[in-house]
Picture 1 (cartoon, rainbow, N blue to C red):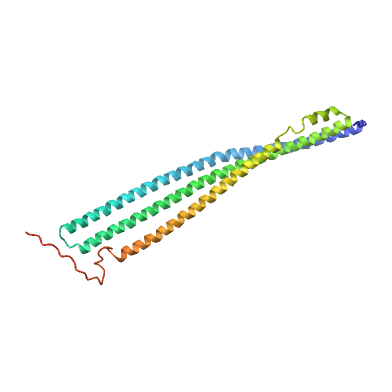
Picture 2: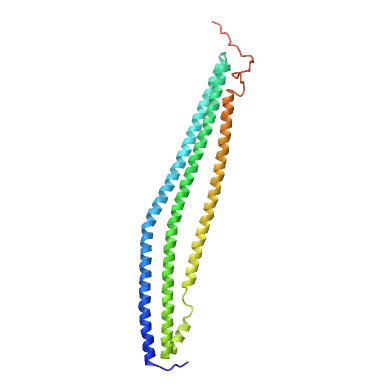
Length: 276
C-alpha cells in the first residue's frame, strides 16, 4: 500500500520517535536501578538468612541429642534405683525381719522412681517438641529468604516486561515511520520475525513455579502444625495418666500389701528368731 511521502510528516514522526525513545530510555534506566537495588538487598540478606537457618538446624540437632541423652540417663538411673530397691526388699524378707512397713516403703520408692522416669520421658518429649519447633523456625527463615528471591525475580520480570513494552512501542513507531516512508521491506521483515520472542511464556512459567513452591510449603507447614497438635494432645494425655499414677501411689504405699493403710488390721509377719 503506497502512501504519499510528506517531508513534514516524516520529520514529525521522527521527532516523536526521538522524544518517545528518550522517555523509554529513562524508564528503562529507572527499572535497571530498581533491579540493581533489589539484587543488592537480596545479596545482603541471603547469606545472613542461610546462616540463621543453619544455626537453627544445628540448635535443633543439639536439642535432639540432649533429649536422647537426658532420657537415656534418666531411664538408666530409674531402673538402677528401682532394681536396688527390689534387691533391698528381698534382702529384708530373706533375713527374716519385719517386711511390712519397710518393704512397703521400698516399693513405694520404686513406684515413685517409675513416676519420675515417666516425668523424665515427658521432659524429653518436651525437648523434642522444642527442637522440632526450632527446626521449623529455621525452615521459615529459609522460606522468608526464598520470598526475598521471589520478590527480586518479580522485579526482574517487571523490568523485562518494561523492556518488552519499549520494544513494542519502538516497533510501532518504526512501523509508522516505514508506513509514512513507504518501506515495504520493513513490514516483510517484521512478518518474518513475528512471534520470535518468548518473554511472556518464560515469565508465566517462572511465576507458576514460584506459586507451586509456595503452595507446597504452605501444605507442609499445615501438616507440621497438625502433627504438633497431635503430639501436644498425646503429651496432655500422658500428663493425666501420670497424675493418676501419682495419686494412686500416694494413696497406697504398696499396691500388693496395703498394710500401712488405716483400717487394715491384717496379720503382720513376725520376725524370725535367730539362734545365738
